[in-house]
Image (tube, rainbow, N blue to C red):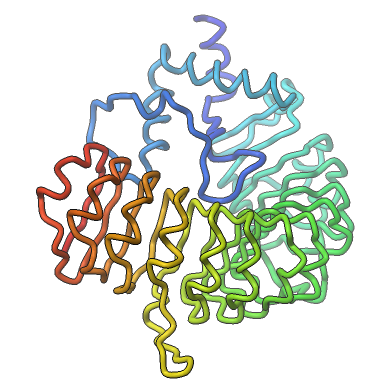
Amino acid sequence: MNKLLDLCNDVIICIMTYIYSMNIGTYIQPDIEFLNKIELTYTKPTYKNYRHVTLIRLQKNMVNLSVVCKYFNNMVMRYGLKVLCFPRHINPDIVTKYGCTHLIARYDRKLRDEHLNQYKNLVYLNLHFSYRITDSSVSKLNNRKYLYLYRNKNVTKKCVNNSKNMVQLNLNSCDDRYNHISLCNLINLTHLYMRYDTTLTDGRLNQFSQLRVVVLTRNNKITDNGIADLDKLTHLYMANNTLITNEGIKNKTKLICLDLSHNPNITDDGLENLVNMMCLYLNRIGFYYFRNNGTPKKITNRAIKKMTKLVKFKHYNNTEITDSGIEHLLNLEQLVLNQNNKITNVGLKYLTKLTHLTLGNHSPVSQIGINHLTNLFECNIR
């Protein structure tokens, strides 16, 4: 126990490995089974922060903390990582003592280039909101493979140009002064997060043939041509893009997560082959009643019923999906069809894994229809 206390004093165990996984896409979290079994003794958290609050609870309990440390140490031994996470400000002495190669310090607004220059062995760096870090220090991290620099206003694409070892890159909402920089020679890049970047074009994107995860929310320059050669794609998040069509996605059969919210072009024709889909977000597509030969473009049972692996399905303003479209989705945990009144008690009968359910527009679902959904955590039926 003394050894454990020393460890806590040294590092303030806030490891959050379930958030900062090395090999998976945004919004997907490793399943740490014991986290789901902890009985909380205070106000029940919301579904959005459930695991986060639970882990904080575990950190305050030294017995359970040893379980967290055991899990983390197993991960370290397996991957050979030296990971340190600070809740706010980095302690340089601790970083030096443990010789870390993976450093997480979200919200450290005191960190400067001269400090980061001391950590030349870093492979993984997560410095969200570290406003004093610039391209100068980041570009000197010669071993960098995983960079998460969300909303670092003084960091640009310039810091990663010609980084042949780069595997995962997150420059969400960073400085875009160097729009002409094309992220050259990132030949091993598998994860690209550039939400709100409006400069990336087809010619620049399709050079990353190894990409598995692409997050380009609000980029409206990428077309079907930009993703045509990305045959390894498993996660594609391009909400608010109105240029991607059925032709662009219909053969991406490796996709397990897709977000094309606010895209008026997507119909059953583009989705019906994506049978490995686990997370599908098509929010507010129903607002756009674009017509083709007089027929509104909609998504119906034809595509959805084939996605038997679906875990999360959100499609605002869809009025076409019925019981026959969802009754075989036995893995479904989250279902949001907030304008749909065609789902009834019959359709929910076998969806026993549901934890979140939202139906609207005078839904006919009654209390009898949800009584057997014992895992239901949040229910909104209007």
